[in-house]
Amino acid sequence: MHLILLKLSKITSMAKNYFFLLVILIFPLLVKAQELNCNVTIDMSQMPAADKFIFDDLKEAITNFMNNRKWTNDAFNPEERIRCNIFLTMTGGGNGSYSATAQIQSSRPIYGTNYESTMLNFIDKEFTFEYGIGQPMDFNENSYLNNLTSMLGFYAYVILAMDYDSFSKLGGNPYIEKVRNIANAAQNAGGGWKVFGDPNNRASLSENLNSQQMTAFREGLYTYHRLAMDKFTTDPDGARKMILEVLTKIKSVNSLKPFTILVKSFFLAKSDELIKMFSQGDMQVRVQAVNIMKELDPLNSEKYNNALK
Image 1: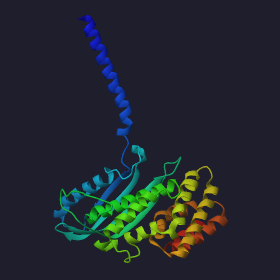
Image 2 (image 1 turned 180 degrees about the vertical axis):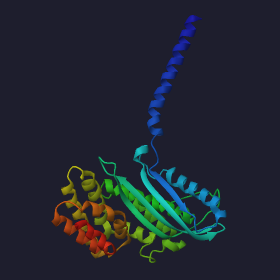
Image 3 (image 1 turned 90 degrees about the vertical axis):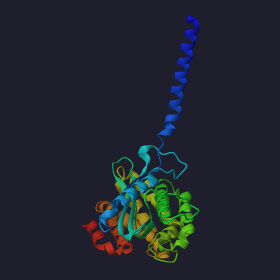
Image 4 (image 1 turned 135 degrees about the horizontal axis):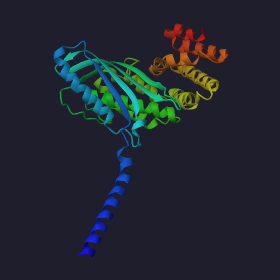
């Protein structure tokens, strides 16, 4: 009997060891997080107070849709998730049909610092959708199921595409293709999906990202972030020269496709960062950079002049 109990004890011990080994092997897979860490804010000040509970439910639904869905086949650790924001300003509607202005932002950490550089700052003035409490958030990149999830999926892939572009040259290609698929599937819905509509809408953003004429711009995202910003603390003068080269390429892109929404969004995201960056360093480099910024973003010319003071 003692021998039997001893053998049972050994079996139990082995089972425990196998269990812990299994946990050790599986745990790294379990902690791999989704790609996005999205914060959702809804301004409902223009809407009836009675609708508040609807927008509370909408906020939770959007947050879950963006953060709990697997958008890529890559493994992300929790601290690697891409920080992004969706700000919705409700402008009208009711009874399940709503209109809003959306601001979509994302950022990227800069190596060796606590600083995060804004990657995307896009304003969508035609964020119209239907929603009811508890509504399923069904989505398919190749099929238009509803405007809300098509728009959210569209921006999720735009965020991913630009982030991947910043870490490897044209690394965002797989996600830009998905952006195009969503836009093509939704174009008959009208609104911001009209290809030949507003040059500043999401359809134009998709066209810009997929345009061969904008390839140099996308390659510039890699140079700007990986080759310049990630090394700024160790070689600020070299980084400024690289960023000047990027601005020069964007100027060339602008001559082919003047004042595209992609270029406008770049300066909306980067203007303050660029001003701070070119407020120091070699004066010749600073002057060249400021002149290009004033040419490409003329509405902020006075802001850019401040970099030379």
